[in-house]
Image (cartoon, rainbow, N blue to C red; front, side, top):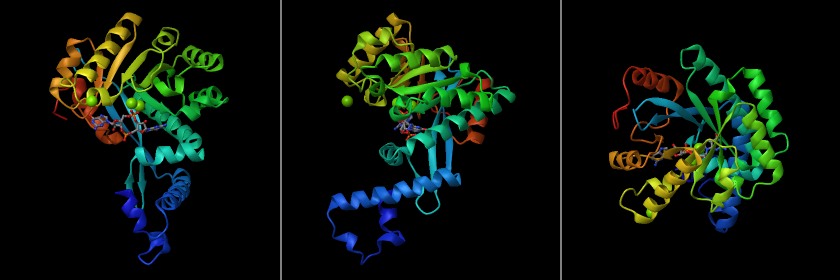
Length: 294
Ligand code: C2E
Ligand code: MG
Ligand code: MG
Ligand code: MG
């Protein structure tokens, strides 16, 4: 656990006064340590991307992947995004971090295109803060130009909450990104209480149903209702749907029966380092993916 690792570090020895300070201050301290470590991590190349396969429900073919950032800290070990993305957002570090992730994913797309995987769509998470910056589109254009990535094979995942009540400027930004040829997906769908009516006006091509609605399928009636409604809404609006966090064959069968296009989850594979992803892709180019057998 990273918390423990950090308290065990030189900065906070056993006799340290930090043991006695109120919880709040410890958290502040912890955040500062994490923030400066993260700042160094971006400079020192301690970040890597792992890629999680996305598989077509109809025929088990690999169709795309999601790039997920990983931080290998020399002392703390692997720090997961759930721990450092919020810190990156609070400190503004998400901007250089997000830029690094997009550039790295675009380079990977180019490398894969040269290795016969030119059809593979690479999805990249874009933080709300990053997306809302006035120079975001320019940043994307510059990275596409610099790397030579095919915009049609890059998907930007923007969270539903980032697009709640989109201003005209944000709406225009989405249109612009779409005109560049990029794919746009709404991440963590179902968690944001967004008005459904705006969906039909947004230039997005996919919805990603949040894992929290998939987790307890098919037993949980409320979750089933949300997932079901999302799938039929998407069908009526002509949008693709990806279900996140599919771990069991029963969930897959349930989603299959309701016309879900693709799935991503441990049932097929965890996020993988590049070399392992390539091995996985090579195996599944020859034969469709079989649930549970990675
Ligand atoms: P997300 O974009 O919704 O990504 C999906 C998360 O679900 C990933 O966690 C993935 O490992 C996990 N997952 C996928 N399938 C399963 C499953 O079957 N079971 C379970 N239990 N989990 C599954 P991860 O990699 O820890 O990332 C967490 C979140 O951190 C992401 O959620 C995303 O919001 C954020 N994140 C990750 N990488 C980046 C990045 O490069 N930029 C930004 N802005 N955010 C990122
Ligand atoms: Mg995502
Ligand atoms: Mg998500
Ligand atoms: Mg539930």
